[in-house]
Amino acid sequence: MSTTLTWYGHAALGLETGGYKILIDPFLNGNPSATVSADKVAADFILVTHGHGDHLGDTVAIAKRTGATVISNAEIAGWLGKQGVKAHGQHLGGGHTHPFGYLKLTFAIHGSGLPDGSYGGNPAGFLLTTNDGQKIYIAGDTGLFGDMKLIGEEGVDLAVIPIGDNYTMGPDDALRAVKLLTPKHVIPIHFGTWDLIAQDPNAWAARVQKETGAQVHVLKPGESFQL
Ligand code: NI
Ligand code: MN
Image (cartoon, rainbow, N blue to C red; front, side, top):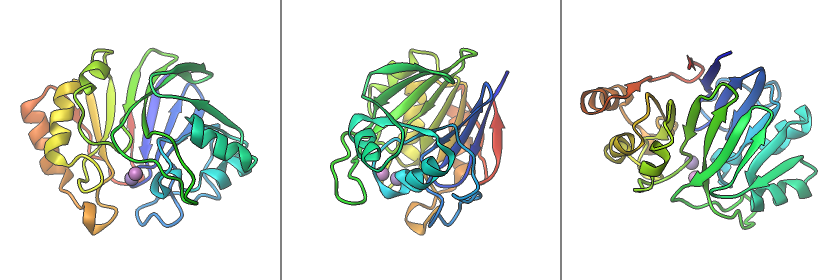
């Protein structure tokens, strides 16, 4: 078995592992770099890092169409449940064994308000241990924090981190994040969607490869990486 990660633009990701299709932060309608449409994309599970519109995105519509279970923090899971969406609530530091692997919610420094103004709890990242034992860290929207070192101690195979600046870590702090996480592979996201978060991912990749042992994979929206 293997795991394939596809970047759909901005923070939207598709993860295929052990035959399961998992969407992460499926903001597709209104996402200028989206490469799939919300009314066609497949999903068995949807993971939502926090309540902001550019992450929650089309979660409700996709979950209703596909019957996918949405996994998020307890506040967002409760909000989704009220809209008739199947949801599984977890919280920071807590892990659960799902059919596709063991998923833990991790700390993130950010906000999490929902689009209708409801309280969205605390923002999160995800640390997934696949059924093959591969560890994938999806940071979510976050600033740099020192406890990334603790996540790194778990042995991260692939880290997916924001580099766009303004709303999240920019290139300098994202490089420091790689030093704390010590992953084998890194994929930068949350950049280039709008001018405000424009970055040169190849320049960043060159710095990371020079200063760390990580291999950086710069994807274009729609491209995949096989772990
Ligand atoms: Ni956000
Ligand atoms: Mn965001």
